[in-house]
Image (cartoon, rainbow over all chains, first blue to last red):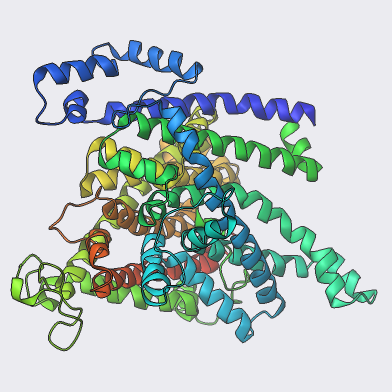
Length: 317
Length: 303
């Protein structure tokens, strides 16, 4: 087990290196002179020059790269042009907001889609199955930002049940948080719910065809026991493996969803940074999110290896 | 992203009926596809959107850019089928022209994706010495959430449809490359590849004539889904102001513009979203159908 973890850690080093390289290179994609883009077209040559030095753009490429890595190792992701504050500080400050909504959406996704997927599989081809699968298909096809806007129209403008946006810290007022976070979480979760309901259903169908299920039924176990004890465990394996993907989708969606609901999370931070070309925030935010996902996938893989020894041996070579 | 879904239909492909006098033109794959309900409904949905996009200038009597103060915020009805927006422009025209741009961008991403994804995937799968390097690079790209990286790239390159296409192709290519690589790894061990090698065929001949044609099924399925995600992601980019710039209508920027008037004129936002969902759903259905028929065992794991 220990060997597997070490191996997995070592193999992620080149990936982490490349991830940082990609984040750095984004700045190099800016056509023309990034200093002018950042300073604005109305800036005087002096101002442009100041920005250039501030960004280190007056230095050759390899020096910029070394500088960036040097800073990175010290936890310095640069300074936001707009906020004039440390990028790492700003992103870490906003991260709990995004994570609280992502976790809410994740819990919602898991509860709804696993139950729906299992029910659909148990009643394969019935009207319940058809209904669940149709809703799942609509779920994976709806643009989340549009769904968010429509939910605002329905639940906030017409019915007035939930606020149109904003955020309340869950540590201060849990009920307020729940009200503010529900619509963003639903908009974020819709796609994942559709995906996971379909995965759960097809896995369940596969599991139900297995010999051990037939054995369990043959020895007279109740259907509840067969499904709850024998089938469910095996259905959970693929569910665990896609949690990384689901989390990645949730964070992806947060840029638009947080912008729409004016939630002060990392997504809306990135959204406004994009509009105002605040490159250090874009670079740093992307890097931080990628690092988080790498870590999450690492944890998922290790857990997976722990629960399923075959993985350890296959990769242990 | 969504490729790991095993379609709504069970993974069992409909049994091929006894091969009676099968006409040359009646390929069993085509017949099975035409009997697949999801595939057919997806194809119909796409046909509607596709025809609307192609014949946008015939179907839309008024110029999508024509501004008219007197006709602002007309609700959908007999005179204005989809209503008008804050500039009094016909929503019907704008949504149709938006369909054209959306499909063209999706197609552009799919083409670039097919070319580069196949190239990288074939190189990695065939030349084992390149595999590790190329796969680590794809891993690194896939470590970023799709939309976030696409946003980062378009933000750097500058807004515009062409840059959106480039960004989305860059983001999705590693994913396609992985799929191609996985099938190349299987096919390269086949006996006929061995035979070609023994006969002294060059690497390129082996890859092009013997390996790639047998990797098509998963690639086609993958590209259908990539088409769906590209249309969806492009809408996100132009919603954020990173795609085609107004007044050029795209579904994403119409929704963004309509957002300000969502209380008074919700149709401006609602209608392009429905068009978008219809297109994506059509592509998803098509992809599910293709997967069930072309490769029923296909369960691609993809981040």
